[in-house]
Length: 209
Image (cartoon, rainbow, N blue to C red; front, side):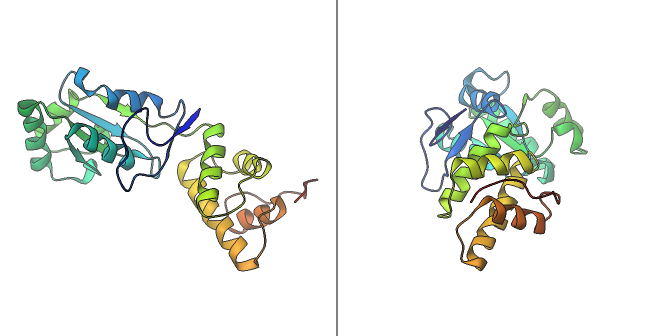
């Protein structure tokens, strides 16, 4: 896994956060980078909440000048249909972003359904344990909290392996450190994450601060 400012060599915009790449999102990043080889000038990017899907969309729009429709599963169907057709006519790519593939969207417009059926779909998969650890370290450091390796490894081995769980864990740790005016330690992290319902109760372990 590698940590870089943005996927591969794509330029950052003023609001882009760092993006961490591993096997869970590498295929999606490469697909967006090689948009000129798409069979149609549209693709769907599916991924869970907080997975970086919207950030990738912003990067994609800045790099290609194409159109991005976020939350495409809730978008106006007529507008999406015309955007798909316009992308083919202008050869400017269209990226549709949603949590799930189009087959789950309940699209009613037949012409849009047929176009979506011809549109490639790439997915951001659940993060690996290594990516969970790297995300935890990155987010803790951004908040000025201790992100040493033993702590982030402990977190990664205990919380659910999902992007949203990492975000919620960091929120809980930030609040615990602030409210108790203490440096983050593994015992403090355990207490905070148990209280937040992010890890289960467990017997005390032999762990040092």
